[in-house]
Length: 363
Ligand code: SF4
Image 1 (cartoon, protein in one colour):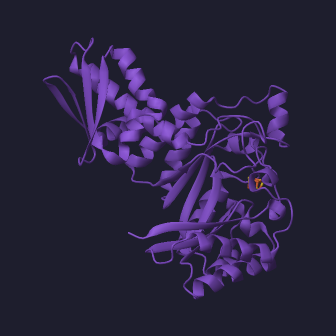
Image 2: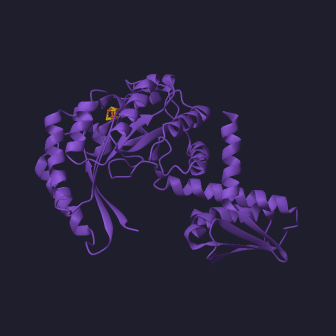
Image 3: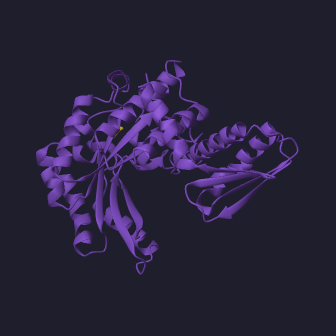
């Protein structure tokens, strides 16, 4: 399988006609000036020197940040021409842009097709009208539905971004948003926990006590179930959490909120912890002072042990184990737990599906 390599070009929001309460694109992209074309060239060349061109890889130029299609058509064309040149020369294979749902129409999509764009990511953020309104997104659910169908008609690969913890949002609304997103059948999603960034309306609301960000624990709880549902529907979640650049570090530009450089890892750790805990309880055996052996695939062993052995320590404490030993194995979709003679094979997808169906049936 070819390795994906991304050349990110951060487009400031000088083209975006809105100012969502959580957004300060200057902080997110680290720039408040019009993007000079020579800088775009330099960035692409710089990234290309990092990549091993002998490797079987798929290199992509991705215009992130801002709302690409809200920029004037001339500026879009200037930027796209640069990317298209690299694509025509087969130096890169794909071009991606991200934008708002109401900055999509046939003229815009025709232009993106003309210049070789492959992937469009839409910042949906929520599919709850109240949350969209309180977040001052300036678009409706209808805009999302219309733009998704139009993008699909044009044959683009489409990704939808959702946020958790926006003003007026809660666990139920996040689950409902994901289920509505699944109905729209995107090719992938990203999940971003809401952070309070400096110089945003959300910062004001936060200091006025009118907005309370999610804690890291609450975020993990919500993202865990979002991941489980996505997994059930085979919907790839390509990212959980915001790219930590030097501009968005807690205490620098992030005033508050569930910032963590590896949120997805925390979420996956929690999923494994719950599965193992449930199965240990089901064993109904005396665990006091015993050793637990856990065998699993190498790819997931770190998440099962947990960051700083958090899962290992929690399980030792809760079940009073003397020790837990972890063993790498070739098994897939399975964890084997054993305590002395007692042995249990755990099917991971069975657990994920059971949990997902439980949540889905609730809505
Ligand atoms: S649409 Fe995107 S770029 Fe524009 S203000 Fe909202 S988050 Fe920022």
